[in-house]
Length: 570
Image (cartoon, helix red, strand yellow):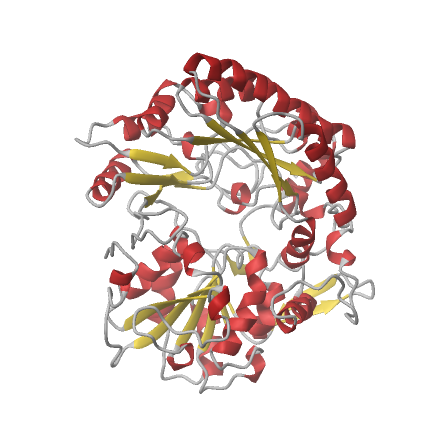
């Protein structure tokens, strides 16, 4: 069901929860951010598809409303009145807000202190199936995997007549993808590394992440249209999941293996449905330009002007049909993500882009009438030197030269925005073993880029906070002891402390330490199907600046990483 404005959203699903299981679906960020998240909208639609369940939305409050109780958007109900509070968590930096939301719901923060009278606290989203352990003391149940499969299984198995403990044990044993933290006990070595992670009772020894094998019958698109989001009045359509290119820093390229694309016929129907509501269509995916029929999808005559936006485009995928679609959409800004400045560093991260491809893409985009470019880079990547960082400056200046030459033909001079982020090693990637740069080092590298480009006209540099990246690294690679860090941020009213004084663990243990090759990770109780020997081999190839071929996305024949069958090599 679609609502076309925020005011019209109230009551769009149901007005009464009488006799139904009541679920508060909560996004741990503001409405503006939450309603821009297609996954959140999808979960909202899926839960409300059940006749015996009613779902209402809630969000982290805007700054001016932080002292007010949190109530649902649909019927203005307090969170504590619901049977289930379900969090949809996408990013590590949203994790501390979960504690604030629990407090505002009138719930005890720790799961062990909540009895049968409290709502069941549920959490899902990509954050959860990368590494849920830092949040595990606060959550009753995690759903690990894709919502289209997990949500039906969960609500069909959910028995509200059971006491909480019996319900948790039943769900753990009968629903694939359910992780109940209290049913698992970690034990650490004397050096603080993980020794074992043991199930309690009949809980399964590992939790298999659930994935839809085929997306051809599973449409995923906007449930609600509203002007009050980042993608104002844009009908979002997910075209794919996963990415074949195997960039070694990117978790999406590994946890969603093999990559899956929706069919042209399904996507075309979805675009037609979106065009009945708006002229803005957003295509979403880790690598939208990899969709084989992208030109056909965007080039179809629909009897009206359609403005397409793309969440991701690779520089080596820009061809005539795609450029034509961008031109027709009258896009003002296009994004290229070289991610690293030097050819050597792009081999380290397995980016698969040459400088020639990047420069050609910039020229093609400007020739197509797109006046502004946004360039994404990272600093702090494994083996990176200051010379590699200077290569970012050099590459941007070369892009600027191509940009300037192409702009003269059109008579319009746009701008280049250089977005610099700090690399954070993520679970289930080849870089899960590597150490992260210190905040001081990251700041120095960002300064090299700023200083190198400050006198270049029409080029702006935006950089994230290395301190925030450091905190993200602690959460991304942490274990249950990191719950103390989340508690400290919560007690500090959401502000990340400069130091975690009094904490038994040095944060550098999680962030700045190279992991042992055979070290057991806190997140490895999750079974993504990837053989860790494959990831370790890819890490060693990265250290040698050796590239690897893309994922062939061939479940019937490929045995490289283990997702589609037992690996052929060790």
